[in-house]
Amino acid sequence: MLQPDPERRPNVEAIFQDEFMTSGPLPSRLPTSCLTMEPRNDTLNATLTVNGRKPLLERNEGPEIEPKVTPIRSTEKEAKPAQRLEPQQPALPGGSQKPTAEGLASEGAPQKAHLDELKHLLTRLINACPRELHFERPDEAEDPASVPVFWLSKWVDYTDKYGLGYQLCDNSIGVVFNDNTRVILLSNGQSLTYVDEDCIEHYHTLEEYPPSLEKKVTLLNYFCTYMRQYLLATGADVSPRECDNLVRLPCLRAWLRTRSAIAFYLTNGTVQLNFFQGHTKLILCPLMAAVTYVDNSRAFHTYRLETLHNGCPPELLSQLKYARTILDRLARMPS
Picture 1 (cartoon, rainbow, N blue to C red):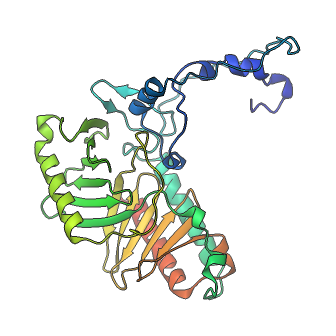
Picture 2: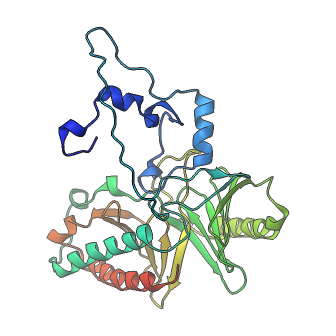
Picture 3: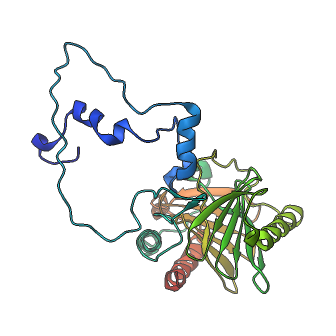
């Protein structure tokens, strides 16, 4: 379809006969999180069974439509080693799934590309030396449509014993254990994802999981109870984007703590900095090319980074300069 030579492009009939259009799941909708994360493959197939929707088999036909079919030309390609941008892998037996484009496994392409893109965007902004500007009417400069899909609303550091726990804006809970495994409890309070040392996802429920996870599920419950009882949520009054059973939540890929802030790096490319002084926060999204600044009154202000070239509040620019140095440190961290 993208062939530059029109003669080599398939016509509509050939496209409709392609395997992509005639087989496999076709959900009626996809969650907004698919802008940054692939959907869960195990529930993708289940969705087709539940809603009964068929692939695109029906189309306009009639005597006035010429039945000519231009075949889709395929070219044999040499086998390539697996890459991180490969399509979604099918679920493994027992509710497991290999890491994919946004997974935690091998270092490289998407994760490095996310950080490189953020570094590029911030470097361009800083080098542009935008004039100091206090927006008299913030709504004219802000871009609410670029609000991140996910951000950390709570966190607690118990790495001296167990690991770091966090809550995402959709109320799902995650724990990064000291052995580099992860557990994520979805916001429905039932669906459980375990990411093992090899970065393979295993899907369970809070009622049914292997005995080997007993201790980690117990610790997950302790983290849940503590954060819900004692911590305030960032963005509690900001409506998160809709979620459903196709959502694959991003994991906390890496984090680091300095004297000034704690930085979190999610597998969907989002980088969040929580500053200790003033309790302000930055949420940087390479895919939206935007930054969300959470001020000390916990109000959200989202800007396209390109917009800030015309002028930027001095406190925001100062924190963006600091964020640029943090990106270098995140890029040097082992995968």
